[in-house]
Length: 265
Ligand code: 48F
Image 1 (cartoon, rainbow, N blue to C red):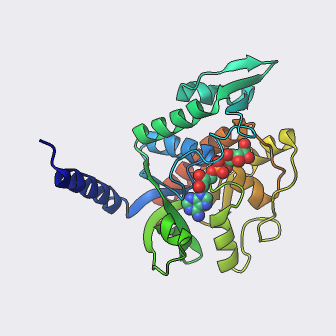
Image 2: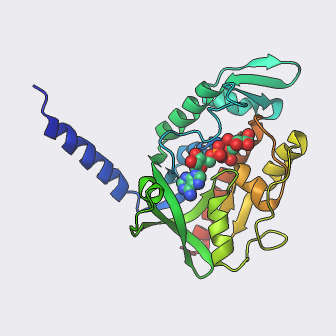
Image 3: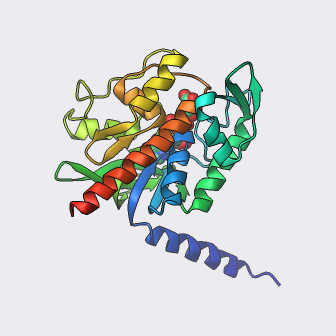
C-alpha cells in the first residue's frame, strides 16, 4: 500500500534538511547555466561546500536552447578537454570546431555537478547580497514564484565565504552590488561596463580574461563576466562558458585558501 502522507513527509523532510545544512557554505553560485554548473562541479569536486541557486524550473540557462532553438552547441578546441571531463559526446565540424547536443551537454553538466556534491536549488531567485565591511558575504533569496507574482514576502539570507555571479547576460548580482555600493565595482568605471555586440572570437577570449573578482567577495563568470567588464557577446559557442566556469572555480579556491591562511573568516 502506498501512503500519500509518507511521500509528503519524505519530500518535506529531505528538502528542509538540505536547505538547513546550506545556510552557511564556502561558495554560493547565482545561476545554473553552463558557466555556473561547470564552476559548481570543479568546486564541489575539490571539497568546497558549494550551493547553486537558479530562478528557473529547469537548469542550463541558455544552453539547452542551442543556437536559435537548434539544439546543438559548438565548442572550440581549447575547451574540448572539458567536454571529455563531463563525458559530453561531440563530432568535429571543420577544423577545431566541435558540435554537441545541447540537451546532452546540459544534462551532463547538471549530473556531474550534483554528483560531485554541489547542492542545487531551483526555483529560487537571488534578490540581494549580504555585505560585511565592504565584502560580499552571502546572498538574500526568495522563491521565484513570489517574485513573479509580485507578492510582498520578506526573503531569507544564506552566508558564504564567496559568491559567484553566473546569472548570464543580465549579471544580476553584480548589478545589485553596483547599485548598493554606489558604483564601487572593480571595473574601469566602477559600474557595469555593459555587453557589446556580437564578435565571437574576441568575446571568447575576453570572457575568460575577465573571469575574476568584480567586488571583494564577488566573482563573475560566463556572460556575467562579459557584461560586467564590457566585452562583446559570442552567441552559441560555449567553450568560453566552460573555461570561464573552470577558471572561476580555481580563482575562488585560491581566494578561500588565502583568506583561511590569513584568518579572515
Ligand atoms: O544565461 P546563462 O546560460 O549563463 P552563462 O552560464 O551562459 C551563457 C550562455 O547560455 C549563452 C551565451 C554564451 O554562449 O551567450 O547565453 O553565462 O544562465 C544564467 C542562469 O542564471 C539564472 C537564470 O535562470 C539562468 O538559468 N539566474 C539569472 N538571474 C538569477 C538567476 C537570479 N537573480 N537568481 C537566481 N538565478
